[in-house]
Length: 304
Image (cartoon, rainbow, N blue to C red; front, side, top):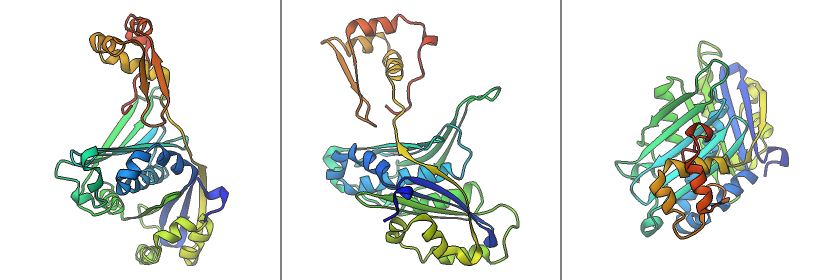
């Protein structure tokens, strides 16, 4: 098992002799907190929770690879047994995630992405806030569901969208989740056979070792001959971005009729699906919100 310093951490590294960059992620406490909030799904569809763990790891890996000042999310939607899977990692290293199932068919969720149905959609979204004179930026890429695994689907995505060779391994069990991502550096860095050599070493790694070995031990065992250089570490933790002000904005966005209907029988009790936090509103409070100018309200969260 990784030491406590590796339990929730992102490690960025270079394999200098091969011209390859990489990111390694270990999750433990953060994954357990996400998983605890998916207990109903865990009992009905263990495969869905495993996919959620892998998606949470993937979001952290991608923040170590892409320019993310705000947040990066992975979202899978369909009309079959798995309705919504959402995982998010912020630039600050906070993670959250949910999975929603069709209760009647939850037990038939498959880990094979090709069995999710023709209408299933997998997307990677990056949202960076406005900074100085820079406008807010939102980018979304759609991931083809032609692979049997999230790892394979994301490898195909990066190879096609960025035209860079990429290798990805994701793993999760009841208490831990981990991932390793390798990508060839743009340009001519490294020797001619470096990527092939690193890929062959990558193929010797199994999910048990990925979950168990500390970051430095794992990277040294695999890539010591080409020289591994650690270039950065970042702690990771569970946290939710919900707030009372965002829930207030969500209520107002419903419109007057629907917002007042929510408190027609008394107090409205709204629960965040990510963290379980309850926000309660009286009829008087809702009427007060509806009377405020829109400029005084915070933008609601996308998934709440």
